[in-house]
Length: 142
Image (tube, rainbow, N blue to C red; front, top):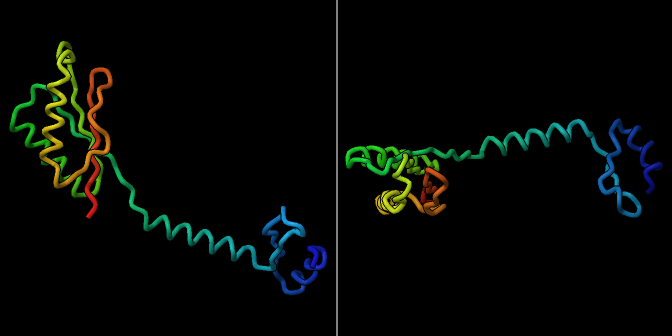
């Protein structure tokens, strides 16, 4: 039936005439309580948002001349972040002439990758950007 014929039926039932497919020939409409429909949609969206897990990116910073104990300490932090299902951004910060030896930074990041092999997978390989070199690790799926 045409929308003009359906409008009095909707008014008679105390409901709304909602256009579903306006481009169809003839346009498709439905008689429903539009306020209740919008309320249910917002409830579904809120429920879906509640079950989402937001992934944070935690950063662990290293220097090219890092000592063994400092490295182990920061590695434990990275493990803790990965076990909490967060991504880890490992950053090597170069200062002054240290930037002329990027292979030292890459060795540190590769060592970290090898040490965290049971906790993480490499999402982004070591990449140098100016005076920093970064690598992103994401937690392994169970």
